[in-house]
Image (tube, rainbow, N blue to C red):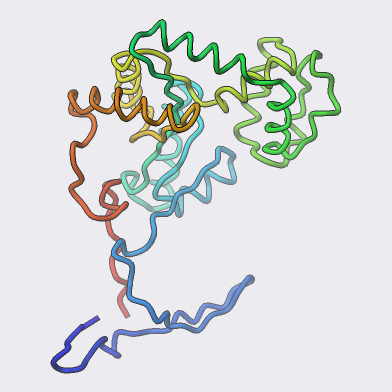
Length: 267
């Protein structure tokens, strides 16, 4: 884009090219009659944990939204993903891993634990099973709520990576299907960071310093109160430790995520 108003030249026609894409799913000649995004292209965010997902994400993702119930699983996932990105011929730092966390914050640890228990008490097992069934693409209504968790890992057609772990972990502990439903609906298998602002910030710092992620996706336990509690109580604590910005240094999402702007392709 030249943007020469005096010379009446908007673009250099010698640097405009057609997409000329012809694939299995669509065909397009182009070119697109819009200027390039300020980010170069939208940030590519992917989520999942299966082997198929990892292969695709290693080639294309810039942000990976990860489900890691423990720090050890988060460390393992991030290490394997960075290795896969490198094997795909990309710089591992060009893709960020952001595990989801569910903070439950109050002024004191005891108040936060009481709030967590109140939230868990509001979960009905059938509601949890309905939510799980939709995500797994498997009807759990065919199994008794007060019976053992069925090992249906080979029959999963939905969120396979997450539920292979969820079901396997439940089988190891010998809990009932109803207990698993309440447990899953309360946390969605994300780690619950429960406590005062200092306690929650300590745990976030521990995960980050130990290589559990390049940042976090905050999963509110309830809205809008859970979001308000985190921003008003935990964010100032993170800022005081130098772990969270006090103001934006860029103008785009790509800037804020410290991702490089893709170069313009040469003709």
